[in-house]
Image 1 (cartoon, helix red, strand yellow):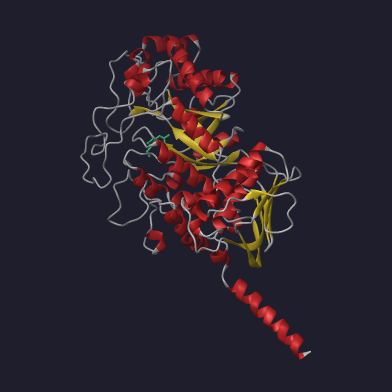
Image 2 (cartoon, rainbow, N blue to C red; image 1 turned 90 degrees about the vertical axis):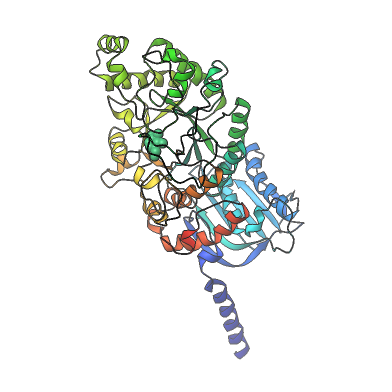
Length: 547
Ligand code: TNX
């Protein structure tokens, strides 16, 4: 009896020491999974570990190839496909019985890692969980030895709270190299985002090649001087910490295809944004006949909102349809973002054609004319089997019938749209704008204004209290935006986005009632080592507890 007791005691002690380490340390998964049951022991990947794919499916293979590639680079092991291997294998199965498209289950034991999901996208999300459980050196692009490639045993069941989980990037105010866009997408994938919103056109630059209109890029993709150093009112800005000349250039259609493919390989949808009717100066510079005053115009060198916008003439609509046709050929996304924000109505007020159109169509005013503009474009986009997204100004003058609304001027637009039974993506300026300051430190690089520390992003709940449960179903998710008026380099962009977007990743994926900021911080401390491996210039003040 004594020896049995001793054994039991020893067993308990062992067990205890395994769980004495907190879950945050042993399982630093971000976003926090739905449920995780900690288990003793670990699965170790070695040269003879096999991969088993239980379904013949191209997408499944793609999702698993991501893991195989990661392991190959850093460990040097080429994980081979095995048949029905009973041990030392990672086994992947598509399970049509599961409900959510991105739901997954992982069971990690010492001998087998069993991964199941309804779709390949779910398998890919699971792969990111495994990635986060592996040592950070798994991110190395070249072989490292002396690391034990272990995954702690556990049973994980996980499903996202929202279907739409996005991050945006403005490449108009400043441009960013293709390599950086890929890195950005990879980082979004790591934290289970599924959407990259690519802001491609604005007053300060047109950034996508359109074959039918070469002047959009030959004239519209560069401006006379960098706007860094000037505000709309011309006030000089002192801070030059991150200054450089990244205000020229565009993405060729080949580069766009490459980026879309790169995102697809990470189960991320790329939503292109082509701004209209406002934020159109770069396009007007190239084709002045598209403006009400016929120009000449100049690509903006300062930030802000400009009076010259697209004139609602048939020729303008034809132009935009032709542009969008090329855009839709490049982007398979169900959603096409057509802007709609910040469109002053001054030129339309003074334009004979616009006033005639208002009368002809029985419209009340210029707001209804903007609504007519958006609805006309929506009809075209719907006719191609796609749907539009617009900023919340598209509510003014009446929503287009099938439009999804991005609520950025607070949450009111989102509430109004949900009450009208329209889909909503929440991206309120007070929580989701990563161009705002994130700390009170004097050393912060110059930002556009505001103050959104990571804890504030973390505290955000995309579902407003004032909605009924039925209306709340129209809130499809949330998005963080990075406008780049003051952001001129990849390093600076990374600094603004991380870790705040990582906090938002948990907001949009994890259960509201399981969120805990201190636990998030503990897990982030672990994942920060991974970001170091990935050479991400994330803001580090939260690691030291600085405000
Ligand atoms: C408003 S958000 C804008 C952008 C600016 C941003 C700066 C939105 C739809 N329009 O054009 O870059 O503020 O925070």
